Image (cartoon, rainbow, N blue to C red):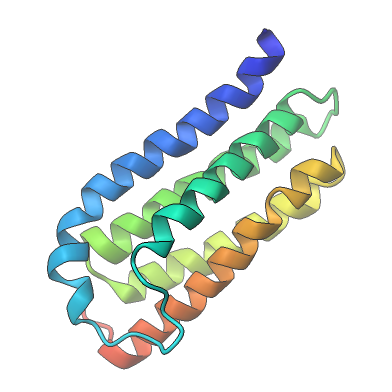
Length: 158
């Protein structure tokens, strides 16, 4: 059962933080976001919770694979996992709650680096842990494009 918790707890943490972020950014999504000029490839709002649900599941399972390993790299890789999760949450706060595409852009650029680093390092422990983060990397690279497009089209006001 101890091994199961290594998968359950990180997955639960991702979903709980995702729920909190959704609640925090709700007003901005209703009142501010619809009025922004967005890039042509912006998906409908309904796509975001579906994508994030899949990504959060993959993130939690990836952490479980790392946590259940006996690798001496495990602590360092989990530090990357927690760092990227923190920057993930921070992006929503900066972009939506603070309504700052500029601060969001800075954060998401760092998030891109952290997720790529996690993939590289977790792959040294278990290939599956790295592969589970590939959809996440693809999604946040797309989100980086969206954030950059919004920043370019709407200015840098904080």
